Length: 112
Length: 108
Image (cartoon, rainbow over all chains, first blue to last red; front, side, top):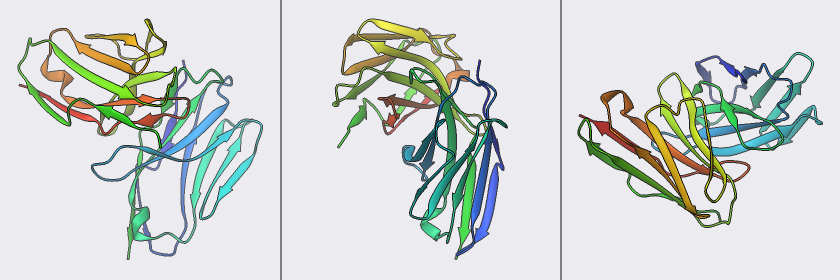
């Protein structure tokens, strides 16, 4: 089955700096890669996703890049703000959306 | 706005009890999922369902069963609760995974 690895497990940045979280996957059949943000005590929420026919996707301060050949994808957050502090999860799924495999999470701390 | 609700936010049960966790979604989604979330392990899939009465095992189905009698409702059952099932349980619905608020289950 699919194996998704996520790094780093914790990340501390100064407000205004950029943050990058990386994930690798093992199954070449995976073609949908969402990212979720989970604030303390709350449910995970989808913040951005990318499909395998696209190399990069951007939404304001967040972007996701995908390298299918190397089987890795990354989340980039620019101009970080304290409200970006949360746990971020990457995931991989096949085209049927029946199974999602999650990374172990990255706790991002943005220091004011 | 998609709404996914779970029957309890916090639950305390004793070892050996049968436990029911219920999840309801209001968006007519075909796919529904149950995960458990443990620190450092991310979200691990227990079971998923892609239609009424249809279910498939995820990565950690042992000790759990599920029921989906109606499209909007997906139940997770712990047949005989054990202390190692103490965890946060998250239900999700839909192709892009709308999550419920979670149930923190403690088994004593």
